[in-house]
Length: 102
Image 1 (cartoon, rainbow, N blue to C red):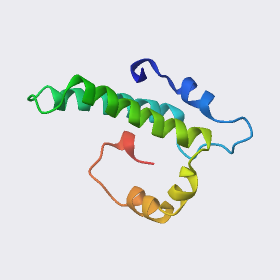
Image 2 (image 1 turned 90 degrees about the vertical axis):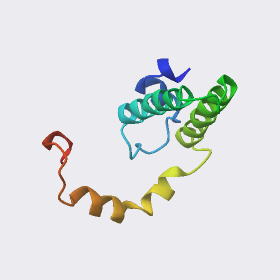
Image 3 (image 1 turned 180 degrees about the vertical axis):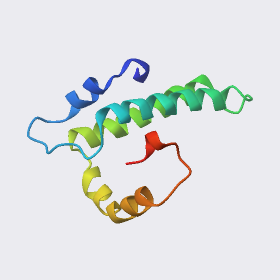
Image 4 (image 1 turned 180 degrees about the horizontal axis):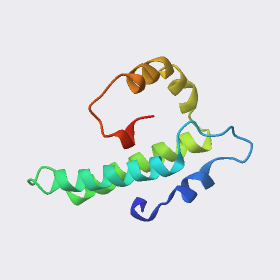
């Protein structure tokens, strides 16, 4: 399901009258793909998780994103509470490659 979900698909979940998203749809789509890849990697280590666990978890994450994008849950207001911390961490010096620096 999410393996084929692009950022245009995510943007289509947002009601037309909603404000601009505070996060880029493209990065959100790639984050979901990363979550899927990493959960499959973890499941491959042993028999702790089943295919059902993987599918249910990924659907849960997709539905959570859908609820935020559609306005069912006000994620933007929750995110706003962390803006000062986001800015403090983002502007702090780091060893990250220059492509990741603002």
